[in-house]
Length: 219
Image 1: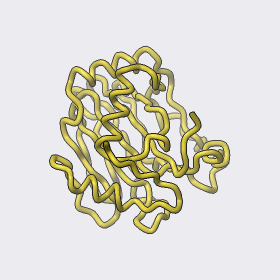
Image 2: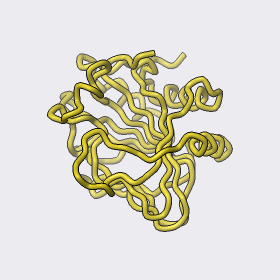
Image 3: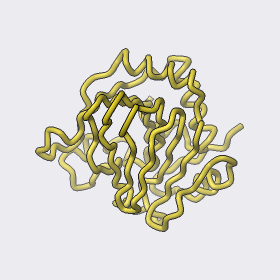
Image 4: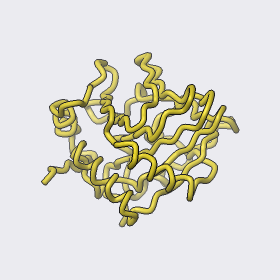
């Protein structure tokens, strides 16, 4: 059985970092500024294609928590996936098995679709404590701790993820997983996790994202 690590405010991230660092095929990006792991070919193409079908069935225009006046800040489409769907159950189980993150602390998996010209400009995944909607989004389960994102396909051009603070650009590859800690080792929020979903220049890009919280997510 895979050990799981709850990551509340009193639970350090070291067990997850140690686990991912020891797994074959998992690369830790060498940077003192943030904790970022990459695992290529995490999902096989058939499973990726099945998840893409489910995103297309429920996608809608994406939104952001705190409006910043830029109507083009996030132009993708988003779809919340059904946790009881066997394909989604399998996806959840694989993420938990790889990371050891406690599924009770996980948000439902969300899919994103980017058409030509669509992007998500520089942002962090955690919620700013001074944000107008902080209590609405974090009052129950707390802030986000870890992000796990998986590319489901390769667009014809563009669509990379750029981590500005470390000048790292990760190109999309079918089945590639990225996992990063939204906090520093001391538990404080890490602005160096600022990242951008770069514009798709040709084709369409699909990803799924799973976020984990400080406290359990409501059942």
